[in-house]
Structures are given as structure tokens and as C-alpha cells.
Image: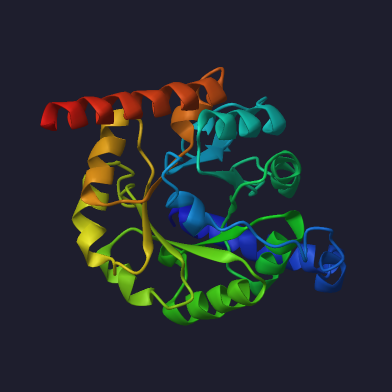
Length: 271
């Protein structure tokens, strides 16, 4: 059984428990429920932004604690001041030590797109995402079939949310549907957990051009952003590379500055 299998199995029980504690009718009373969502697609395409989706992540099942005492307010505000295009917030508690309160806290202090990073397998979680202030939900093609993705994405769209579908292989592109807004290529090999941006580069042309395309996981070198942008990617999800430092916001700012420096040097060289 893979770690993804374990997470999904646990998530099924977790969701059933939350349905009893916080029924949908209660979720609909949230102050966030009718607030217009902020478009991730638009922010990723803005020329004054970096295209980076900066992630707030305390822990991972493979690496253990990354930054367990980080403060959501401080880090997320710092990310946006550094020039990030959007935020990603882990809300899975069992495996990533995140909570819905982390996303609520990020929403309280930031007007920007916020991705709820979790393992969504049930329509209830989409109502929940709306109630905690998320703008975007993540659907992982590896653990959902095409019918499930269409149903879940359709519900998200009906609630005013955008949808990021994450793929690991070309075969998973068959699960795309019109309700998807952004396609993310996860650079992590699920068999051996190695990471390579070559995965994104090889899959880029396979993704229909009418979707916004982003690269995820294992991006730690500013040169990789430059290369991926040259290929055509609109966005880049980065979490651990920033969060593993004592000051994630500063790490994000220096990273974005370095990307701009490299791009300016390349532009001047061409000129």
C-alpha cells in the first residue's frame, strides 16, 4: 500500500466524521461562503507577479517536520509581499499537520488566490473549502477516476471555486474535463519518489493550451523556473524549498529576485 493509498483510506473516515460534526447547512452559514473567490488563473497570468504559488507546509509524511512552529500570518503575508502570485495551504491534519484554521488565518490577512491543498475525494470537502475561504481546490488524478473528477469539479464551479487538477503522467490527461481551470504536473515519481522537472517539460505539449499550466514539486533552483517559463509554464508551486528555512518569506523574496536577475541577464544577452 502506497502512502497515497493510506492517506485516501484515512480521509474517507475523516470526512464521514466531519459530516456529522459540521453538516453542509452549517458550513453554508460561514462568512466566506458567498464571498466572491479570487481567480488563480488571472493571478498566474499577471505580468507583475512571479507565477509562484507559495505553500504553507509544516510537515510531510516523507520528510517529517519541515517547519512545525511557523506562523501562518507572518509567512503568508511575507510570501505575498515577496511577489508570489498565490498561496497554497495544507489542510490535512493526519499526514501534514495542517488544519482548516491555517487556511482561515491565511484568508484573514491576504487578498489573493488561496489553494486548499488536501486530498479531496468527497463533495463534502468542496462545501468545506468554500466555507473556510479557499478560492481553488486540488483534485489529484492519481486517486480519482474521470467521473469523480468531473462531478467534483462541476460542484466546485457551481460554488464559484476554481479547480486545479494534478497529474503525474500523460495517461492521466484523459481525465481532463471542461470544468478544470489549471493543470499541474507533479514532478515527483510516485514509484520511487525521485523528483525531476523533466517530467513537466516532457508533458507540457501534451496538455491542451486552453488550460493554465503549472509545474509542481522539487523546484529549488531559480534556473528551473526560468527554464520552465521558457517552455511555456504559467505557474510554479513551491513549498518545501521556502518552508525549510528559518524565514520562508525571505527565502521566497530572494528566490523571486534571483529569477528576475537571471531573466534580465538572458534578455540583455540576446539584445
